[in-house]
Length: 234
Ligand SMILES: Cc1cc2nc3c(=O)[nH]c(=O)nc-3n(C[C@H](O)[C@H](O)[C@H](O)COP(=O)(O)OP(=O)(O)OC[C@H]3O[C@@H](n4cnc5c(N)ncnc54)[C@H](O)[C@@H]3O)c2cc1C
Image 1: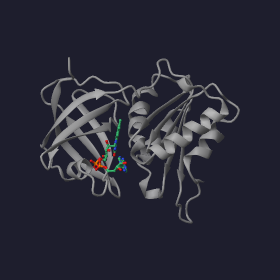
Image 2: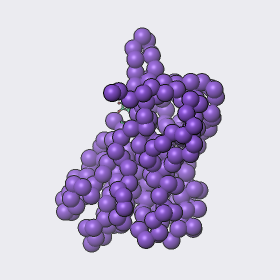
Image 3: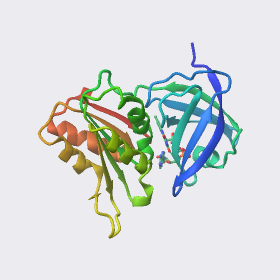
Image 4: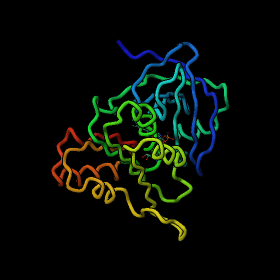
């Protein structure tokens, strides 16, 4: 049996960084939209008489029939510019949530590695699972080019104050002089976080080039396949 098509309704969207928006949707025909943080929804629409389908990771844990997304506008893309221009109240065909990019249960000590909007599923996982797992270490290594593109920074900083088992390591590949934090790509900082440990799980999300490079480096260090869990956006 196929997955049912639902109608998602845009509640609101707001810019959270240049060319990046946070979206809130609901699904009016259901009271609850059950899913596991990190799963994605599959949106479809017709563009130039062609049906186009795109996946978007949930950026929030389940909450009634609502879910949140985080998207960047791909220049000359089909779906992301369409979503950016959508007005509150607009309906969109949706399947899901789907997919297996979810936190192992029970979790091991974990490193989350994200670049850009690859942060979305980790926001969902942290908001959904930190509270219930006080005996596990969670480290988020988040890479973007510029400080202004550190999505949800205030939220993650707040979580570090609240949960002693959570660490947040933002890194900028194009910092300006005032930046005092980590610089460069995420990969090296993940290896530094891992140190001598080989018993942690590493979850990776973002574009293929980063994800593949990160996976190769972790394999070289001796991490097993089941410890490296990833989602590629392209
Ligand atoms: C499981 C899964 C989850 C995803 N979750 C998200 C998400 O939470 N947020 C999000 O913004 N995107 C996400 N994507 C990517 C998304 O599905 C689309 O590919 C993206 O929005 C571009 O679609 P488009 O029709 O606008 O452009 P297209 O015309 O399809 O895209 C053209 C180019 O954009 C590149 N591209 C794809 N995604 C991105 C991106 N995020 N940033 C820059 N370039 C990109 C592709 O490599 C392609 O070359 C996810 C993809 C997958 C497979």
